[in-house]
Image (cartoon, rainbow, N blue to C red):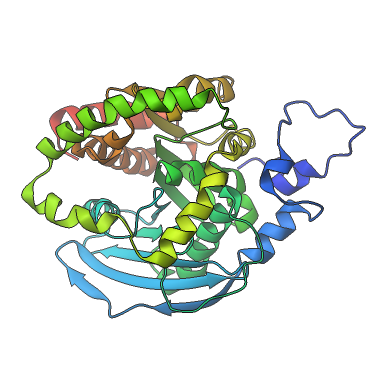
Length: 367
């Protein structure tokens, strides 16, 4: 960690008459008005109510604990903590979910697979994912940075319950679609919440710039590819997966209302603004799909052009390919590779330490 690193809030306090080289942060897209962004994030993401939801369940992969929490901003989140039977690393995996999805179905299956590899997992749903029947006054619009702050606050809140076998600050981050976009915020803000993302594996982050009317044509062309990708995906899913996947979509009216409110933040370009604030020592792997027009691989490549620690990899498929079992296999291979590399190199880990091993594991299926 570099001592000279500044927080997002500090970068935004640069005086207007001072040179702002490399500062392209769009404050307006954050809807913060005159309130200092860093202070607002810290205050509004504070957890004011948290409960266990049901009993801790004992699965074949480990223990799963479900929680619900509410922040000072008024938003309610479902969360899941998974503790494997055979833990292989002290560094937990954290993530938040894709747009319109719950903490069940596909997302829970990802958690279980990571637990099977010996990872402690901490997952947070989107705003409105905890249906506790309470309606709170909302103190702020939904932003990706706000979602990132809530996720970081949750992992820090529950870490005390697992402090004897989980690293207090270091984290591995994954995320798909919205989860990858919020992931940009988690990477930019981790130090503000006393955490340190050692490796991020992000899949299909979208709209690194603000939506333009001309993008409607691009998205229309994408619709052509999605049925083909969906048909291929269904063909790859086992019966067990097909039975669990319907739980992926959260159709609760409370959640649906919040998912609609999330939309403007996703299309605002905030993900790209956050990405520009990520410290260059972060090791990041980004997967984009070639027929996923919303991912805008060229835009991400431009943002990270001067960061040798970021690797952007295009794969065949469209946006829904993020649910392809092969996509998860690659994520699991990189997770196993990271654990090996970190065990050998500690905080001096380099990107190639991960990817060379990951390629071998992905080919052999030995992760």
